[in-house]
Length: 137
View 1 (cartoon, rainbow, N blue to C red):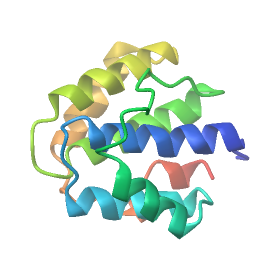
View 2: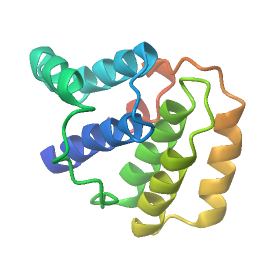
View 3: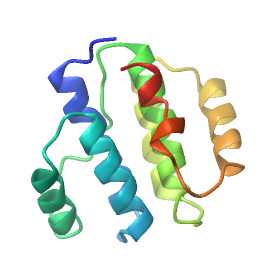
């Protein structure tokens, strides 16, 4: 599937928002974001700069993201859930934001709850080989 530049940007932005929600940025989250950034076609120096300034950046609009189609949105929510659980903490703020993003994209609440349940049982390391993103690009 060809993913537009806007959807690619929103995918990365969404992952950054998820990682920022708890006001901490664990090394595993940085690593996951860098890997996704590369797969989405962003330069590594751009990603390094964004990560370095992420927590201090008060200008990131954290409104739920609207993707161009439901398949991309489902992929994003799946990867976002796995990122949210990557630091082994209960991600309340991340879950609320991801759920809003799911709903604004027409994703059924039951689908979201099932994906969340599955994500809680996943290992804390999100491999890009296992990412939902790779299933659509």
